[in-house]
Length: 299
Image (cartoon, rainbow, N blue to C red; front, side):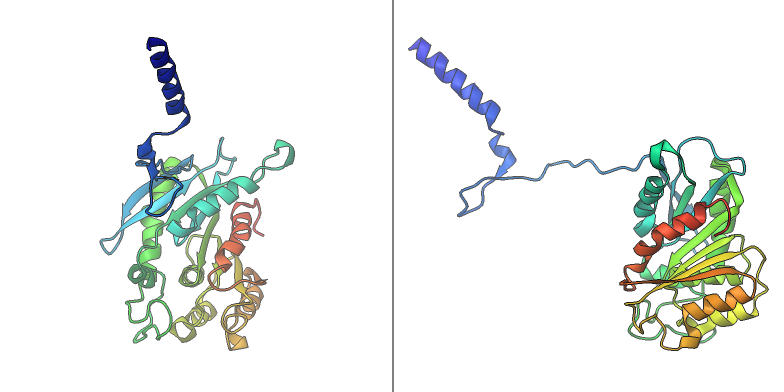
């Protein structure tokens, strides 16, 4: 009997090693198989060489600013910086893509830089921060932001220049000649507004910019602006956006706008993103935005 008990104990121990505890399974009524339960605690995925800081904004809001940086020492002139609007959406993609494209064949390094992604926050705040002031104007029905406050673009750009930029420059040596502002939709509109205002960014990437806002006010701003020398711009749209190229009026199209700015001394380029709708254009253009931001010379 003692020998039988020993054999039984050994067999039971082996079964315990082979089978997970019953607490790790969930038994559903009418289902014979056992399904593993979700872990009680999950470890979040993390991005190395990155940080998140909170900066108080001009209207009493707190903004999360997500920053990533390359390995090694900066080049002689400092790191180039890509300033990314709608940061909470685009920061991981931009950082991983930049690091992937920064690794050349055979271990050769390619241009790299710092990414500063600013949180947009809720639609109400985004509609306010990313739009220029237009007296008596209200966002029409049928588009995001209908009925919400607008006109806070100048205050928001000042916040980036006076509060966020010094925070970055205290931690890293950056290149003032390679500062790129990139945004999508209202964010693209804000990038064009910053160009018209003569802000300190030297390169601009406006993806699917909301040229319709304010009945085309950004066109008027750019026409009347004394544009600084040495500025470059990529403006892109998807061919699957509403209106084919995003604008029913060819005179107000992004392609025409790029041509007009080129004639006025801006190194502007238009790109049609084939097969892309409004929601997918930013991802499709991210590689181009990174290449523009980190290139040694203005593209």
